[in-house]
Length: 344
Image (cartoon, rainbow, N blue to C red):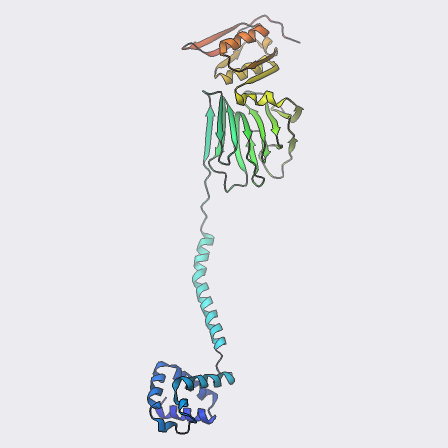
């Protein structure tokens, strides 16, 4: 725009005869760096502005402010609208940058946390105590194995698997049920203490509840399983050849005293007694005389050695036996064939 045109626009502005388009031209000219410099040079020629009312009207800042006000009055300049458009454009631009990133993370396979299972077995000790990652305490009997994850966090349930016999004192966590897998059946608990027996050579699986509450189920655990409930002082037996839950009331101490190094027997069949003694002392037991299997046996075994226990067994149930030793220690007990009448 020639200098003469600029002067004419300025004169029109002060005479209030400037058009909207001319007002916009004047505004953008003064708002530019080049236009601002040109106006400063013109303002030094004060005779060009003799029609202006006061000398302060020549000041570029005051002039620009008045032009801006005039444009707002005429609704020519809508700075707010310009800002909104700029912000919307910026938002669209940023979204365009973010969309590929969002798509990448949404479609990139998430790394699945791999559970590391630990296995603990006991054979050379009578009892072994473990503390699981959730602070649950477990006592394992000799001849038993437990499998459990190294970390329970991030899982809906706390799953363990038992082969053998174990006593649990479970840390309470209602939002993460504790599941004990016993093969054909399982036990669901929240926070309680109970004993489980699940040896492969036994005809049945047993669960005895000491305190709290447990729910038993068949197969794998699902929240909508059909559950059988136990209350403290009850035993459930699940016979493998007759898959039903049989519940009875028992003296819990008889089934949990082993955790303190004591075996309690009360009218137990000799075959069951010999199996438990075999596991307790880590020896093989072979019964070649079925007639003695169901003889009842009652005793409390604590610190006795194997020779003393065999003498005790013979005192209540006469039978012939032989032993195999290694370095003086009994490694195998064989109940020999004997002509003994089977008890009624």
